Length: 150
Image (tube, rainbow, N blue to C red):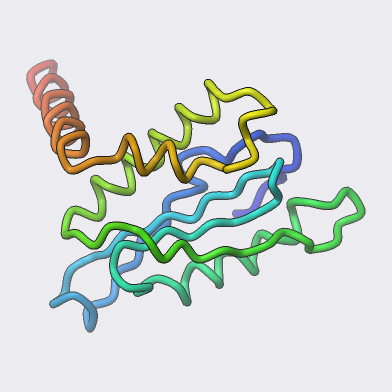
């Protein structure tokens, strides 16, 4: 389902997370990457930690939604950017979650004048192996609390 996002500052978590399952890739596992749309910069950014494994799927998503964002006349003018400096690691799901959290935090706290560099530097500074591990523990604690409450 595609919905209008013209008035949103940034898409929701479910809009920016792209999951790809392909049994022929990564020894039968799943791989997560992230597509983020920044309305002010009018750019879609794909961040993939597995050498562009999801590039085809990210482009497919971009082509499906680009006409709904950007110019008020409906022209598909949103740009697409592939981030090639994503850290290569094995915890892609946690990294995608940490990156999405960092982007949302940046978006909430930045001022219009700070937006020129997008969110790249903030994410590179905040999404470290230790921060991702801490977030993994935080998520595990939340899951345990939910299990105990049932």
